[in-house]
Length: 90
Image 1 (cartoon, rainbow, N blue to C red):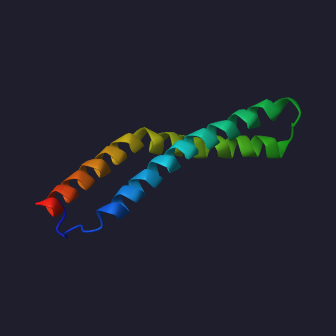
Image 2: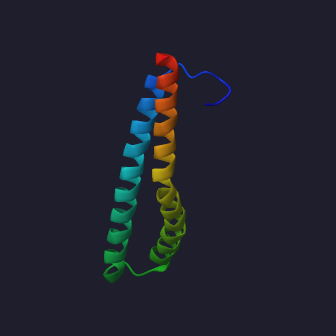
């Protein structure tokens, strides 16, 4: 438990739920855009197509790294919520 007492457990629960939804949407939307961009390669052939591909690849590495760590963050937050609730219930 941190040094301060957590009294707003519902806010933590709501944040965790929103974080999980955000992570799911981020994963789905990033991969959907990347797939669609790739499919457009047959009809969109210019410098901007390549620039967008480079940018998507760069941001994709960050997204993949973030999403690979997300389950640990979500689990840690769940444990924190459980400890806070137990503290408040005691």
